[in-house]
Image (tube, rainbow, N blue to C red; front, top):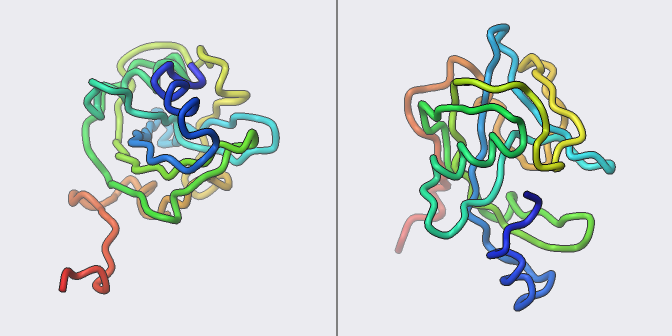
Length: 164
């Protein structure tokens, strides 16, 4: 589903102005160790299967729903890889809506399903080798795609942020 009723109602109140959007994204590998990427079309950049967390949803629940809607795959999140946000995660959609994402990125296993775009948000879905990943709409750090990624959850930190 391109935009939920919740976000439609919010947009009626704020127009195209910047909103914070709690979100999830999935790193899904096939048996060839390729990562699933989606292309929305219309000249946009590629992305991970991802989407907004709806009111009442836990992040993992939103991830399972979003991945199914966008890819036709049922997944199980097995590890939180990182939490991202801030000004570098601001995005303006082609129609002008502005968002700043706060993204929980999960590593997932495929449980079942056939790769197919269900909700119309994906013009193309492809498994791609890590070293050939396409240009992405959001600036995830390269190491998040590494299969040998640390067991620690990554979160953005700058020593200048220390509370004084």
